[in-house]
Image 1 (cartoon, rainbow, N blue to C red):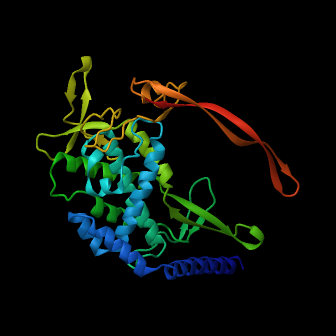
Image 2 (cartoon, rainbow, N blue to C red; image 1 turned 180 degrees about the horizontal axis):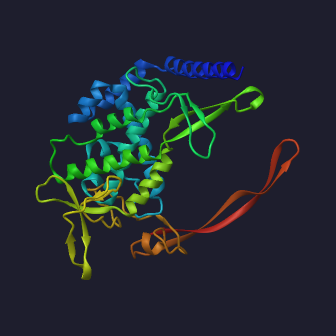
Image 3 (cartoon, helix red, strand yellow; image 1 turned 90 degrees about the vertical axis):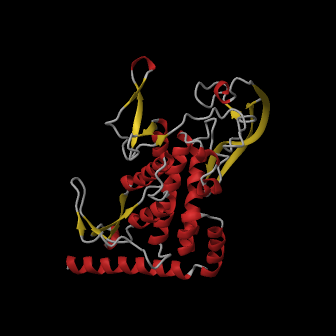
Length: 356
């Protein structure tokens, strides 16, 4: 009896997944998407234009992945002089402005953009957007892990291999590019994609009569891009300065020995998951059109902070202005049975400081 129930529930689960995928596919407007995608592809050059033109809708998905990456970038650096606000999608795809600086910021952008492309394309595959990819068929049968109940692999496991491969072919410089900047970009792109791969986990749902967990169905899912951004921000803080070895075949870490003298470590390569850079970061205090730097004039700062958002640090010693502001905000809220919340309006009075 239990076996029959298990088979029945398993069939219902698969039927639900396939139905959802078909509904999603029918709801798309291929003509509108293709028109937008072709327009985007035409703005690209070289290998990116070739890859995008071969599959315009995937190219459009890649653009959406970069937009998602830049959104997370701005959230991660909101308290820094460089807050990612001057970076555009065109900068990423055309490798211009801050990406030419070869700094820590460049390394973060390369990593999170490559991760964003892999993430968005993988999502499109799992949603049935393209015939050439779909769910991860490797996830099948029963699974077991010490300390938790067993499960059946089902649903739609996200096939990160598809997104990974597309990101590598679309975002990485071609292997014939032997310049140090090409090596650095490929390294950082790989670090971004690897972050998603390492953080993949399973999501589960119980099925059974009257809410029981007769069968537990699980599928593989990627981490949220917000989590990827947080982890890459940690990598940014510990990014490694590198140079090429004598044979110009690999990157080497540059460390400092005693008394501030530079020491080349010919036997130590940066780990695959680390971010690497070539040049120290600009100061970001004043506008610099060459790198698309906006400067910190007019930026909000925290007068009482000792961190990177402090007025002393953010304003680069130029000083700051304080403006008193008053705003009506909800306060003293209480729940009224049934069913709404009643709040008073209170005056919020504060001083906002901005850099000169």
